[in-house]
Length: 278
Image 1 (cartoon, helix red, strand yellow):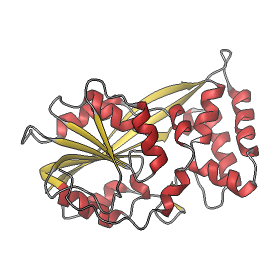
Image 2 (tube, helix red, strand yellow):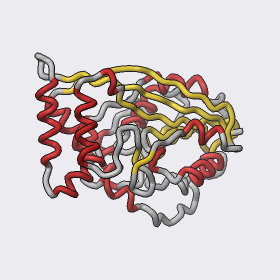
Image 3 (cartoon, rainbow, N blue to C red):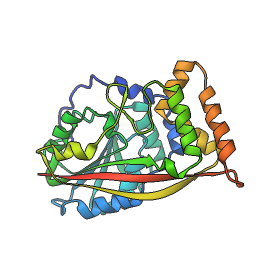
């Protein structure tokens, strides 16, 4: 599965902004388990006893662990992550039920896997940061015939929350170029990304489809602090300001909008874009 020679990695600067924030990811919610159920439905029939699913840009393994817990028993699960701090935390957290997870170093644009060796490629939340034309070419190279690509991400349903519009307006006021519907990209700025449209234009892929699932997650004050600090947008503001005043402002908003039990329920939407190798 792994290539015998792993290419030298050179363009990793964008991933250093995750240094030192891996523990805060413990407070991030995972993803709807329905996304993995849909992967199970869409993936091709097993071709060997070593069918492999890879989570690209897996971070601390939020989605990787969900894959390991819920994919078909025949599947091996690998998490690929270029940031050493995030990989270390993923290994520490373990998980995956009875199935072990292998975490490896590597870049989305230069995948360290052999041609046609992977049945399912996933990226949960990370795809907007990739240089996607070479990423798509690499996915097509490593996927088996009819193999599945699943690009998954969580979105705030901010119109259904009193807290979220105020919090996102705070971020927009403090971080240059940030807007709530724009995502961090490979150039260190923010842009709107239409992954479905991109895949529809790629000749390597067919059967492009989008699905989504609605759910909620409840946060107390400590969990909200961790969620805020896990954001690279917030970390950029902290570095620019030289202090963590933005975090205190966000927690003041939490105190304003929390319920009688000291919690805020945030509405999420997990969205997945699927495509098969043509």
